[in-house]
Length: 624
Image (cartoon, rainbow, N blue to C red; front, side):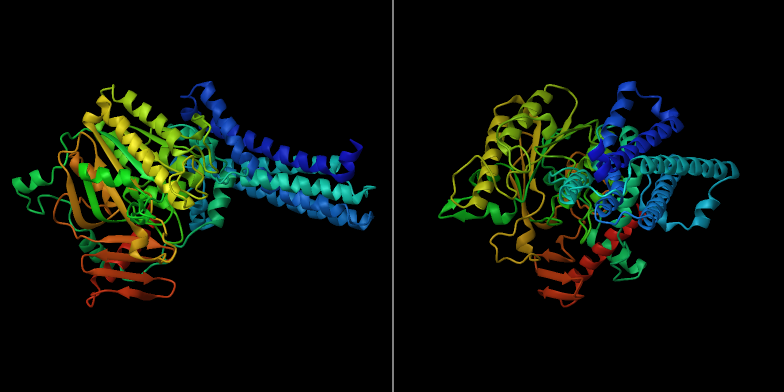
């Protein structure tokens, strides 16, 4: 205990523990306040709320403990005097009061707002002035909120000051170097807690999502973390304004066109040609292949094709020749695929849990309108970039990730594709025995850096990893073909984004973003090659159109099987966009405010379409 007081390590540990205790108490009060909703769940579910919530509680407590740790480290080298002690005491008191007040304010406002927002507080509250916030409260709400804020702040300050008086000391340790080393080790541990560990998935709201019941997920969220993380990472949704609102909407309407077959004046013969499936309720299996762009399906190494299995399967299904990925990142490509919503330069809507939850979703639409049950498989950590939160909040019934798997073949990112394939295939085959239609999605990961795969066909490490995923896709197709599940199955292969291979292709070129899409399975009526230029976002409307399900809410998505829509591919890169159609390509850099490439577009049609899509994307995000 003597050494504990000498280097203040117990003081730091106590501040950290007290902050977590404060958060747990606040969560308990919140659940009691919303007892009408929390009371509908079993005690075990409520217990899981507290257990899962500890992840963000600890991360947030780490931030709150950072300055006390710095004070403790500084105290080792300061002279032991009354003046120094007075300065340190005042600094600590000021910090404790400020931290307690900020946290209590967030908890108080969050408790009042959840009733209306049905999501935990984030930085969106900052768009309202104090006067506007107060105008929404009646006298009783204002008084009760003020009392709760005062009581919460007082409790935290008293707790922190008690710990400070009992455990903090300015007495110099005999071995200051050793004491400093101990505190630095504590700082490293605190950094790990703040970050959420050393895995690729840093601490984020998605970490605590564990149920398809959104109230339970919301209850597990730490609102201090939610608020501060979005306040720091906020975005300007008005940054891309090329036209006035009316002109932007006019161009957007022309760019997307009409998905209404009546408006397209489709004949009965045209309708037959646009019907690609033998059933309108197939078991849908969607494979999102990590980075597997056309540069990989078309690549070879010393005469050996990288993707012989995918290319062989092209002749059996519906092949989309001129499709373009919406972005260059997995989180944005996943949203583009599952929500039909374009990627955004310099931000990812998936990281804004509240707005992402309001996006249209294939899982939600298929479940609501056709009774589909949905599952998402991933061999790594589904918390990465808030993926789990996005999936549950947009309608997925189940998320299966590395926590539900075991095996020998792992990379930095998770289990290898061959091991996950066995789980996915078996689950699909078993589910096919049920009458309810299924929507299964698998996001692969082996074709991601560092390209560690249990496979050695090509002596190029990068290409060999993609060859491994291709091999797994071939095995999956054969496994499913051999089962009764294949008869009514629609198997869709599509990448999340392309890959910059070879190295000399530009990051903003259409070749970098050119991707394949292939529809296979017993539900496919006949082989088709779709030559139209299109975007990854068009999958949603095209798939729903084949099922006879309305897709008006997917306003950025076009039904590629029907007429009445403009045909071009649209993609975004770090701060710009590209538009490709049968006449050429336009590439625009927003940072430089200039067109980098412009083929045969003297009337700027492609350029204006791209600008309208980008402006409208951010306008819709602002409205969510």
